[in-house]
Length: 208
Image: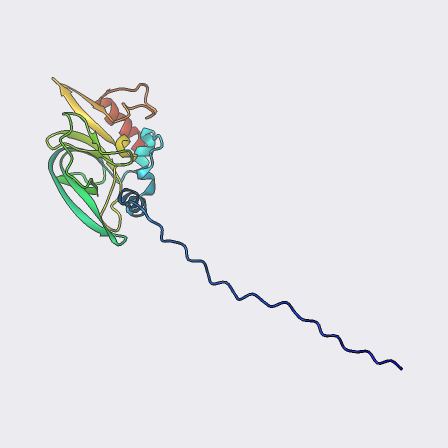
């Protein structure tokens, strides 16, 4: 009678568990960080979009729609997301208001540049860079569409430069034009418009 001889089976050695891979920390430049924080803390987010907006879009997204003369410009900073963001505060003496604050001095604070910008040409809002707000000049009149302030006190122009109209006067005639020469607003024509024509179109949109 034959007895079976037990055979031994050697299991392959198991590999030690791999330690989680450590990825190097993500490096982000100051400009990119500032832009990211702008999207995170400015309300509403649509305000920083560069998509084309109609006049109706501007009206729907604006908390304040005011025309006034810039009487003061001051620079500061705000702490957000563990960093410091430069800010600029504009104060305008209200001449006419369509929504939001109606009388007195209208003040709004937005992201600014790290250095005080040079004065913009009369009647024009100078651009700082691709996704930054126009720079308003003291003593100039503007029609502004601004957003509700965020929880850190920052607001924005709706549609960036689309929501900023420079007002120019020639004699008793006034015109208004934004940085896109009023293209895409859904009005009968583009280019500088008589101010009263633009004001009437705003009232119609707000009445809808």
